[in-house]
Length: 310
Ligand SMILES: Cc1cc2nc3c(=O)[nH]c(=O)nc-3n(C[C@H](O)[C@H](O)[C@H](O)COP(=O)(O)OP(=O)(O)OC[C@H]3O[C@@H](n4cnc5c(N)ncnc54)[C@H](O)[C@@H]3O)c2cc1C
Image 1 (cartoon, rainbow, N blue to C red):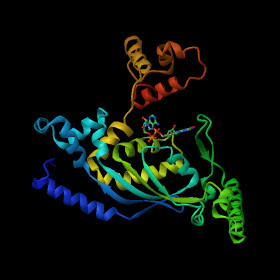
Image 2: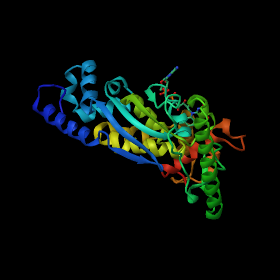
Image 3: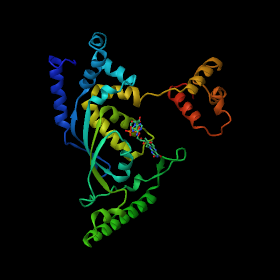
Image 4: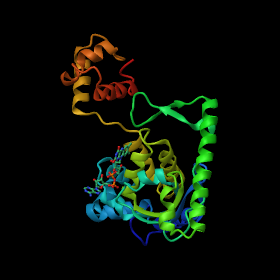
C-alpha cells in the first residue's frame, strides 16, 4: 500500500477496499434478540491513516517503515490524529438501557428515531430464562453466574407480562388521543430505539476499547464486539490488528506494579512463578495495611497473566 494516489498499489488496494465496503453496506448484523448494527457509509481505510501520517512525518518515513509498521507505531504511541481521518457511519437498533450507555461517548454524531414524532418501536429486548445473571460479588457494577433455570423461567414470564402490559397502556394512550411525546413516558428501558451513529476511527477505537472490555455490560459488549469484528476488522485490517495488539490484548504496568516486580525479582529466593506470600511481602507499602485493595488485586492478576505468579 502506498500513500501516493497515482500508484498501481494504491489503486488495487483501493478497489479491494471498495469491494469490502460494498459487501458490508446495509448488511444487518444481528445483536441481542431484535437489535442490529449496520454499516451505512465509510470514508477511508488503512491507507487514509498512513496518508495523513506521512503528511506530518514526510516522505522520509517511507524508506524506513512500511505502512503496517507505521500504523502500528502510531497506535502504540497514541499518535491519534491520523486515525481521525477515517469516518464510519452506522445504523444501530439498540434497547434504550444499552443506548443510554452508548450515548455517553460524546465524540460521535447521532440522529435518533423520534418517539415524539413517530410511534415507539414496537419491540422490547427480552431475556431468555437461562440468561438472567446474579449480581457479581467482586464487582458492584458487574454480573456473576447465571440464575437457576426455574427462577429464570419465572423472571422471563414476569418480564413478558410487564412488557405486554406497558405496551397495551401505551397503545391505549395513543388511541385516547394522548400526544406521542407524553404517551411514551412509561415505556421500559428495554424498548428498542434506532439511530444513525457516525464517528471517526480514533474515537470508535476508544469506544470499542471501553465497551468490548470485560468490565462493560454484556449487552453493550455484544454490540461493540459485533461492530469491531464484523465491520471494523474487514474495513481496517491493519489498524484492527494493531488495536488488538496494543489495546485489547495489552496491559500496562503502573509505577507501583513495576516496584512490586522489581522487589520480587531482587528479593525472592525462588524463580517465578512467585507465591502469594512472596507477592504480599513485595507489595506496595501503601497497600500493606488494607484488607481489601483493588489495586493490589489488579497487580496480582497482571502477574498471574504473565505467568509470574501462581
Ligand atoms: C465499564 C464502564 C463503567 C462506567 N460506569 C459509569 C458510571 O457508573 N457512571 C457514569 O456516569 N458513567 C459511567 N461510565 C461512562 C464513562 O464515565 C464515560 O462517560 C464513557 O465511557 C465515555 O467515555 P469518554 O468520555 O472517554 O468518551 P467520549 O465522550 O467519546 O470522549 C472521548 C475523549 O474525548 C475527550 N472529551 C470528550 N468530551 C470532553 C469534554 N467535554 N471535556 C473534556 N474532554 C472531553 C476525553 O478525553 C474523552 O476520553 C462507565 C463506562 C464504562 C466503560
